[in-house]
Image (cartoon, rainbow over the protein chains, first blue to last red):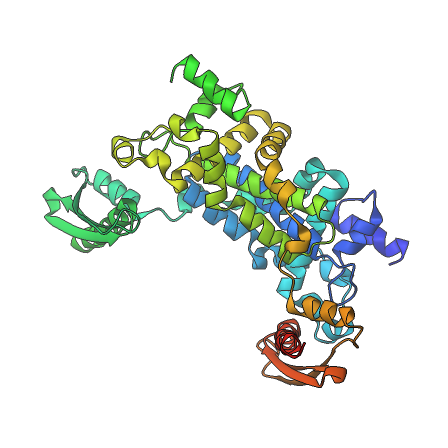
Amino acid sequence: MDKERQASLSRIIHYTFSDSTLMIMAITHRSYSAQHNERLEFLGDSVLSFLIAEELYKRFPRLDEGDLSRLRAQLVKESSLSGIATSIGLGDFIRLGEGELKSAGWRRPSILADTFEAIIGAIYFDGGIEPTHQFILRFFEKQLNEIDPKLIQKDPKTLLQELLQSKKSDLPIYTVVSIEGEAHSQTFTIECIIKKSNIKTQGIGNSRRIAEQEAASKAYQLMLETI
Amino acid sequence: MDKERQASLSRIIHYTFSDSTLMIMAITHRSYSAQHNERLEFLGDSVLSFLIAEELYKRFPRLDEGDLSRLRAQLVKESSLSGIATSIGLGDFIRLGEGELKSAGWRRPSILADTFEAIIGAIYFDGGIEPTHQFILRFFEKQLNEIDPKLIQKDPKTLLQELLQSKKSDLPIYTVVSIEGEAHSQTFTIECIIKKSNIKTQGIGNSRRIAEQEAASKAYQLMLETI
């Protein structure tokens, strides 16, 4: 890979490596050479997950861990990463074996996403956490800014509570009907009662929380049907 | 939580918080208070995964990403984390609601592991990456030192190659017998031939690599039977 191409790659990723062999390894697919990018991809995947988790944690102090996990999964999924890789033209730089070249491997989402992760791993190994953080902010800033925590799918208990509050109705009461089974594999049956609306539903699950959510979901559907 | 108990907890985790409310939140189960530790657990889980990935990446430069992933999964699995939590007596400090207290929740592996992760998240939020790294090295040093990369399960192609080399035999030859199906869901049939031993096996898979491994695995079994 000549110096000119190395310089263009540095430009599109906005990072200049101290050790350019790391950059070259990051864009090398296993079909091209034994010095390929899969270990860097492993490292990059974990740095990326961590830095996105931290951003979400700090930006959305009121979201619970379930919403944070879902948001992170959306941001780091293959189609998101390959989309970013495509937008900066990373495909032109990936070093592929003959077979992969013939089948247009540089356009395959999995290869694009993996290479993007390998570049993150290489930047981390080359420059440490700060430049990696800057890199990730640069490429995820738009997606991070577009997140509207209000639009995140709420769980049924929350939805039901908000609906009842908006109607100035009493809040639902959840009661345990039964707990069956051994300590390690219990089945909970929970009843959700909304007196004023004459609603009584049941949910079953392996935890109290799951059973409550199921009961709440049924009650919420009934409420919507009777409005 | 009085100052004395806070001091004992700091002692067992070898970390003193600047912001002690973070420490208290980290040991608070959702059954005890709305200010519980699940968000910190989300953060801690991702910092832990990342720091363990980095340690493995640096310590084992010859392991491939599959082995690195398996090793990491072993180190951060629930039973490993709850084991560490138990060994330092973390259970005594967890703040649980009445129901969880009655059912001895402080002994439950999931609660112990989650609280341990929440403490990692709290240390990261309180002190940044360096003290978190120190914390993780302290508690995982023994497990990290005990890893013997030679004992990690090798893939069938490697096993077969090493066996043949030890017998000064020719190396196996892998040939594509057929590739069927559309570009996105191809089925590869690969033949593995070891002339000298009169062995010919076939493997089938959705990638060349998988098919080769299957063929190698069968050949390896045959080799072992004929020795």
